[in-house]
Amino acid sequence: MLRYVAMRFAIWIPSVLLVMMAVYALAFYGAGDPIKLIFLRAPGDVAYNPERIEAIRESAGLNKPFIEQFGYYVWNLIQGDFGNSLTSGRSVWAMVKAAAPVSFKLALCAIVLTALVAIPLGMIAALNQNRRLDYIILGSALFLWAIPAYVAGPLLMVGLIVLLPGVNVPYGWGGVFDIRIILPLIVLAFQPIALIIRQTRAAVIEVLSEDFVRTARAKGVPEIVVAIKHILRPVLTPVVTQLGLIMITIVNGAIFVELVFGLPGLGRLTVKALTNSDYPVILAITLIGSFLVMISNLLVDILYPLLDPRAVDAKRSR
Amino acid sequence: MSVVQAQPAPLAEEAPVSLWRDAWYRLKRNRLAIFGLFVIALLAFTALFGPYLTPYDFLGQDLEARNQAPSLAHLFGTDDLGRDVFSRVVYGTRTAFLVAVVVTTIALAIGTTLGAIAGFFGNPFDRVIMWLTDVTMSVPNLLLVVVINASLKTPIAQWMEARYLETLNPFYRETVWIDFLLVFGSMALISWPPYARLVRAQVLSIRSRPYITAAQALGLSNRIILMRYVVPNALGPLIVAVSAGLGTAMVLESAFSFLGVGVNPPTPSWGNMISDGLRVWQHYPHLLAAPAAVLGLASVAFSFLGDGLNDALNPRGSK
Image (cartoon, rainbow over all chains, first blue to last red):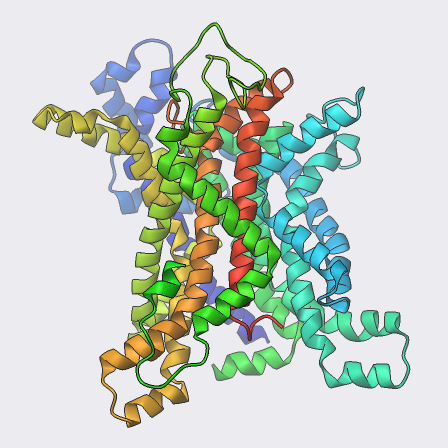
């Protein structure tokens, strides 16, 4: 088991490095001169004084070749230093640390909501396979999957205000237990819910044809007990493996949800950095996003053999 | 349906019902998929013949008729510059379809090539290509495209400017092309992995099927084996993937325009119309609702059609 985890980790590190390098190269070659970007905004005409620029470049180590600068960036990164924002001059890490809790709480709530709503719905759909209820649930899941967050958010907002006059616009952040979290949470959970409903349904249908389910039913175990005890357990495996994909949809969705509902999280930080071409911030957030997804995938790889011991043998023989 | 016509007639023996006709029967029974097909056909028609359908120029400003609510003269109303929203939505359809088709074509070409190489030649190509696929898929695609777009915009613009000064060809002054070029390139760069995976899996699985061995044993030429057995069997899942990919690309394009890194105004795109509408929706909800509803409809239609195609073309996969 330990060897398996170590192996996964060994494969994982070059992947992270590749992503970091690609993103860094884009910013390095494409972003233009960071010194100029800083001083274009500064008072005075430093940006047009080549000697001063060269001096600053020299002192910041920005005249070194790409690989050296990249190594330096990674080295700082390991020590938790993401560099400084070009616009505000604040440390990127501090900005991320201020914004991250909002996004993380929202994402966590969305995952919990997804699990609570989607797994039962997927089971109901599967148990009523090819009946009306099944079609309704599946159709709604497809619909939720297809509707983008920046369409659903504003339309729900308009709808809410029109239907319930006197309600405040759900804009801003007041913590997890604030009423304003409901709408963004629902919109953020749309895609994960759709994904998990379909996964659960497919998995349950597969389990339903297993011998142990037939046996349980034959010996008269009540349907609800069969559903929870015999079906739910094996269904969790394929659902858990979707964690990486869920993470992607949540990271993507958070950008729009936070923008539409005015939540001060990582998504809004991204958009703000984008409009200001604040590359250190964009770089940091892209890395954090990829890191989250990759960690989720790693977690799935590690959890998978625990959930389904058969998988280890299959993987070894591969 | 061009697929049905493009299918060569069965060679000697009489096939009772061809794979495609069979699939078409199954697709027809799926009401949601037919709805999707209908909406997509309508939108494609709009995209192709847009200029003949719009009552106004999409840039034409009528300052006397600003911010009008929907009426007979302006079906979706007018925006803050007095531009007809219906015409802009129609032109947005053109943008959306152009991006979706071009991006999917490029991504399909890259993905098919890499997937086929990985499947045919095996290691070490297989390992490297699959690793690249995994890494690309594990980056949140929105963030990656945003980074690509944001960082390549200036160099490309500078290059175009330099070319213009060199050649004085007005083509290089057309900044719209920069937007499109960037959107095409960056989106294709993140969209290829699913196709690569799919093609590789298809190649691996079909290559080892008994009917291929049988065909080889019968002495059929490689070309006939490829055309008669490999391509039709690999095509089904690929069609499903392309249908899903078109919808995804369309939504992504709007997403980038919404964030301001995609197609920039004044070129109309559903995304930048939604983003503009979001600022004033409390006063003029139609500016937000019209593009948002059309985008939602298009996305849902592709999703329904893709699902129906999946059921129709892979009958074994869906129980």
